[in-house]
Image (cartoon, rainbow, N blue to C red; front, side, top):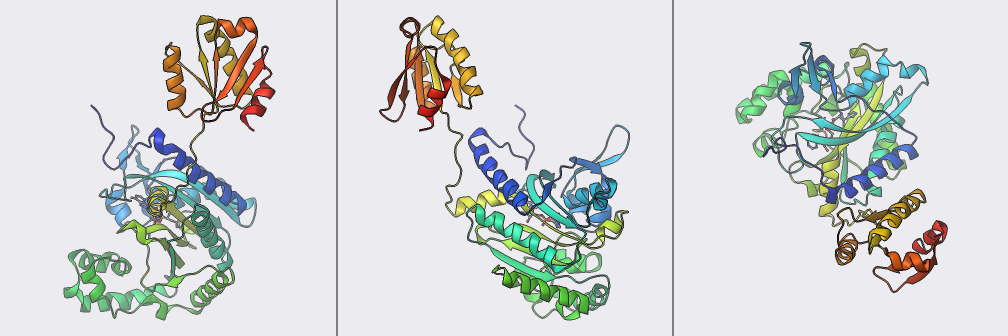
Length: 420
Ligand code: HAM
C-alpha cells in the first residue's frame, strides 16, 4: 500500500465541512475589508524565496522542497505566500492600477519541518497583504482583519503580541551591539543559538528553550535602538489598536523567522496550541518589493495556519461546523419507480434541492436504511403503484410531516414543503 507522505495529510470527507466553514469566513471577512483574492502557482523559481525569506533562515537553509525540473531549473514548492504575491504584484504591474493594493489568499504551503501537532510539511495558510502604504493605519488594517477572522470563527482564547524590528537605518547598530552581547553570554546559550550568533543573531532572541531564555534575560532589545521614524510608527500603531479596542501586549523579544521584516512584527498566539503557539503572524516588509526587482513599495501583511485554527477551535469546544445537509432521498420500489426518480432527481437538483438516490440497485429496505444513514430530511418512495395512481407521498425522516403530491409533480410545491 502506498501511504501519503510524512507530514502531509488527507482532508477526509468527515472533516471537509469544517474546512469549508473556515474558508467561507476567511473569504467573507477579507471581502468585507475589501481585499481581493490572488492565486499564485504552487511552484516558483527557487531564487524568489532565497532572495526574499533569506538564505540563513531555517526555511531556506533546510526546509524547502527544492528540486531540478526536467529543464534543469531549480524550482521550489512555495513555503509561504508573501514572496509569490510580491512577485506577481511586480510582474503584472498591479501597483499601477491603484496607489495601494489589498490582496488575500488561501493556499497550501510546504516546509520540510519535523512534523508534530500543529506542524505539518504540507499545511494551509490564509493571508493578506497591503502593498503601497507606508502608514501605521495599513498595519492596523492587517491586524484587525486577522483578529476579525479569529473572532468570527468563535475563538476567544488568543493574544496579540507586537514589536518593532526596526529598519535599515537603526537595525545595523543594534545588530552590532547584540552580537557583542551574545558573544559575552555564549557559554550559557544552547548549541543552536550559539550557531545563530553570526548567521542570524536576531533569531537567537526568539528561542523557546528555557536555557536560552534564562541567558537572554538582560539582553538589550531593539526597541531601545529604534530610530525616530520606527518609534513613531510603532506608537501610532499602538494608538490605532487602542482606538479600535483591540487588546495587545508588547514583546520586545518578538522577532520573526523570515528576514524581510522592517518596523512592525506581530503574532496572534493561543495557549491552546502547545509549543507551536502561533495562530498567525506577520508584519511590515518595506524593502521586499525593491529587493525583488520592483519599484520601492512599502507593504505589510500576515498569514495564519488553517490547521492551527482548527486545533484551537476544537480545544475551545467550538461546535462550529454545519454538515452538508441532505434534503431529499428518493427511493424506488421497482424498475418503473427507478426510471421516474432518476428524472425527478434532476428536476429537484435544478431547483436547488440537495437530492440523493441509490446507485447500487438495492432493496427498498436497504434504500430506506441508506436514507437514514445519510441523515436525509425527507423521503419519497416511488413504484408502479404511485405512478398508476398519479400520487406520491413525501415524508419527514425525523418528523411526522407527510404530504401527498400529485403527478406530474410541481417542484416548487416540493421545495416549499422541504424549506418550511
Ligand atoms: P510564518 O510565521 O512563517 O509567516 O507563517 C504564518 C503561519 O503559518 C504561522 O503562524 C502558522 O500558523 C502557520 N504555519 C507555518 N508553518 C507551519 C507548519 N509547518 N505547519 C502548520 N502551520 C504552519 C509567513 O509565512 C509570512 N509569509 C507571513 C506574512 C505575510 N508576513 C507578511 N505577510
